[in-house]
Amino acid sequence: MSFNDNLPKLKPFKRSVSIIGVGATPFVRILDDPEVDGLTEGELFGYAAREAMKDAGITGKDVDFFVHGQAGPGWISNFGTANIHVANWLGMKGKGSMHQSEACATGYVALETAVDYVASGTYDMVLSGCIDMPYSIAYPTRVLTKRRFGTDAIFHEVLCSTVTRDYNLFTRGVLPFSSESWLDEYFKENNLDKETIDRVMTNMAINCRRAAALNSLGLFDKNFEDLAHDYGMESAEEYLHSKYNPLIGKYMRACHFEQRCDGAAAVIVCPTEIAYKYTDHPIEVLGIGHSCIEYNTPLLEKLATENAYKQVRELTGLTGKDMDLFLTNDFFMQSEMLAAETCEYFPEHKGWEYMLEGRAAFDGDRPVQPHGGRCQYGHASSASGLHDLYEAVKQMRGIRGVTQVKNPVKRAMIRGFGGGQNVLCTILEQK
Image (tube, rainbow, N blue to C red):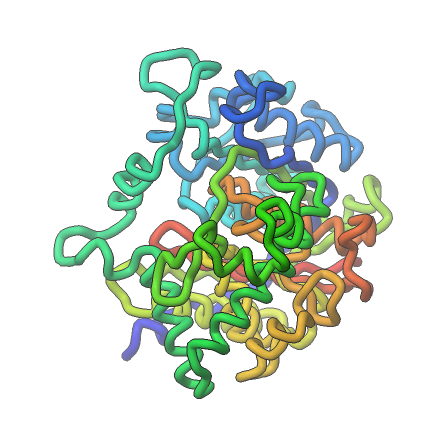
């Protein structure tokens, strides 16, 4: 029996759970910006949590329990039990809380954990948030307001700890090799050449950066056309094939990988039956599929995505075709296309055409990553998963402003992954 046949069948929640509030900080780089230099984990987590409570029309007194998520508290902040450092910022001192850490999947597990607490009947009102500062990490023995750069050397040392090193080579499943192997397989299956891959990836980057530059929470305010003109070039395509955007893999260029930054986000969930006290249109969580396949498995991201999607599809009876919006962890940018097609949001073998034709842009008919994604909008490890959720909720409410997708969003799917590798597939529906 294959391990893919070893999946449990999801059971319906014992009671319906809905999202009533979301909050998020802008994605920033603390050490590069004098306006925010000196901010700490508590302040960023508190900002996002209080915004989520304000969005729901509640205060810390109304919250029964909170979940704290951080991808790497040991190396970013030198925290042990990271949740105890933020309660005072929420008006929740003395209440129960827990910390969870699943690397870049942490933000998706944050929602899953909160939903489970409410669905089980243990609590009625749960706040779940994530904070990460991988760009501006703490010193081991200094106060948190004094920070240092999270260099690639430090990051790769940490990344090694997510890989099983007993009988496994570091490069077997780690960036950019794991996602490029999926990309390589995809284009071979579709009989496409390297020139086509390059055109698809370039167009994805241009459309994602266009969305990110318009997003007030994003890290950058210039699109690739602007950058090209700054360097005396004629077009975004010219800039994206210049020395400023070198190849970092077989297909991937620098702009196809995450932009590390600092930030936080939070969500409030409660039983749907009482959600109408706080909002006219709660966002119900219909189900969450979850699969974990370790790094020593080739094509792990693809296999785990298939597993998680299968679980939630069988539970809800809904497929990607029924969705109006798709978001995903895309610190490898090609994951947008690959995950969307695997989850049937795009027709089989057609995802590359949708990307090439701009149909997946925020103003296209099958939008993916309308905030711009991790490679253009920014990636703050655990916080990014809840930034995806924040974006989905705002889009479902129809209040995203200039990057609001053109068709109403009744249902959305969020595929998350990270941490060697947890993959979750969540379906949301507006009531």
